[in-house]
Amino acid sequence: MRSHIIGVAGPSSSGKSELARQLVHRLPGTAIVSLDSYYRGMEEIPLAERKKVNFDHPDSLDWELLHEHLGCLARGESFPEPVYSFADYARTAETRTIEPTEFLIVEGLFVLYWPELRDMLDTKVYVQTGPEVCYQRRLNRDVAERGRTPESVREQYEKTVRPSAEWFVYPTEKYADLIVSGEEPLERSSNSVMAALHRAKTANG
Image (cartoon, rainbow, N blue to C red):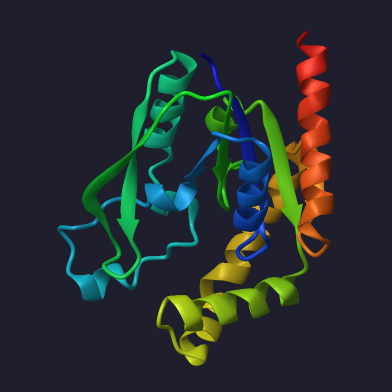
């Protein structure tokens, strides 16, 4: 089986993950592969140095490995998705097996950034959300879930997150087959994606 691969891109905290999870509810058996799982392994670097790496730059991601893994799906083969630890800024020894299914969702900041990766996506979705909304969501998430202080979140956002969005993420909107709002109800944006999938299926017979 060749999976229909749905790419979901957009700036940090735009609502990509929430949209992906909503789609999984509507497409039973569908798996989500997060680009965050593909941060490059830096286990040989001291933790203090790892924390200084700019994780909001495309170079921090092992997109080549993801490209290789999606190639497995094209051949009807499973692949081992890495498991990344945000606490240790490193890959763990664990992996998660992704099996070929009718649909697969790949979500992350730079999903539409690399041409080689874009070419493997059957439906390309961009989640458009205002910068201030994204910042407030990220602040709430990082403080509640990742043990960060509001000051550290604000500093990182201004130093790397916002510039990265302007340089590398916003420009990829033009590659999307479908643009949805991350500020509207999830049901509405997921309906738009489902309609696009239906049109694609009809066009392909």
